[in-house]
Length: 434
Image (tube, rainbow, N blue to C red; front, side, top):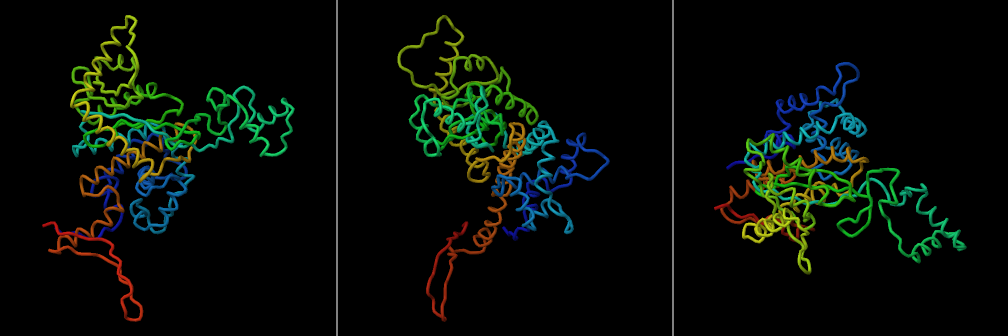
């Protein structure tokens, strides 16, 4: 098998039949045609707008300003964006303006079209779905929060309390000392709000810190790892509250890509952790399109049903399915596959643990394109063996060497001074495929 050096990001994504072809560009134009005018200054082409957001995922850039800088710095990315030599990269403010004018339904349609591509490649089976949630830091600081009743900031509240108590607090250290001595203090979302981003809520992040945050929730196909639904919720909502909206999106998307969506006579396995366990949730899922396998928290004592036979039946059925061999395997698989989707979109590759947008609708639009990039990475890995353009650029040399060499080859760095070898540093060891 012969390989040639990659010529850019466009050539790689074109190999998986996305965004590199004119048909995909015409398809993206058709879904946004009602929102573009025939007169006036030409706007950003819709295909270029979506491509730049995919660049944000593959390059691990969280801000649109950073996406603009990266695209302007790379010739291969300019080719991927189909920019002529005299054309400039769209400004980050143009991206923000285009995103605000395109409704959420357009971004959802682009996300669904990526799912259709995965379904054609056999990567969306829809037989077993795992659900989990995480947190992402909002673009608002805790020091800007104000009280809902009086409108005063945290510092103003401390100054008022010091004055009422007769304590002289002239410096910031005095206020900090007073705040530490207070009892029953809390930052409840019922008492405090952010004037910068009212939809961002005070929450504890995964690393234990407290920030204004949002709550992303994924519904993932456990057989392929594809995210079939990605929703953004307010961070103060519990898992049992947000599950219904995520499952509704998980039902609508498979209807567009599969002839057999979830239905009551052919239910789909739903696997979740114990944060989603609730009697009301299990009652709603029972006899529906979802076969629940939700982990049950350990409780002391006996369950009291108070005549609620439907809840009793739903809990016992879920417990039986969870204790089976299939249920245990699905629980372990959910831990691996669903957490991997968050690792790639929020931390390792995507870098969206911190968002730079305000408003849940804006964050939802950007996050849908971000997760669509993650799904594209799965398609690329299935087609050409690499999930990112950088991975493909690094792998072609290995493929050439492993095909041409019959013995293991060591790649190293040799440092020579005055015609004498001073240092040999091994970098990689390539083995033959034979």
